[in-house]
Image (cartoon, rainbow, N blue to C red):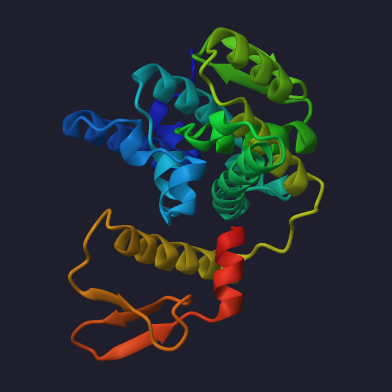
Length: 269
């Protein structure tokens, strides 16, 4: 007989919270009757300034089957939180989940850009990416490098050797679900290997909090500028250079203008 679910939740607090957030967002999407166009990420809406979609697309699911599949895989991968003795653990999990969300979304857009501009495949201009799969594939890849003897359990009865799981799952989902985002899954694998091999390193609480702060700022500003949501307390205006956004908090009279370096980094991310 397996352990009570309560103990599993206590040992996987971050995973449990993310599953709860994704499930709550799915419920909200169903209640509001939202579709891919409301929360998804595409090349076209990204170049129009909808950068907030990098975040909303990662945590949103339209189909309940998609949600269940991703959350089942994520629950199994939550074992990372219990591996503090080998350099992983809860902090590592949270820090690099943040990295996976942002960089996998940015890499997908980069792949779309290459295919559209270099190879003239206009199909990818309007393709919408939605779901937590990028992060799931990223953690699958990290675990396959860090703990190759582990198993990936899906739905409580299907078990895959983690060392082959990233590419097995990539091929499997592409065959079974033709509309699944191959490039999205592949981007998660690429970023996952970059993290596992130490190409992306140095994440600690300071950098994670700093990164989270920039994500929140860019999220709010892009929501406001794109007209997707109107924040009454926030007014965006040009101060000196029309190409650089500025942010003014109404009531305080304080104005913050992003430097050209910040904008360039933001566009890359």
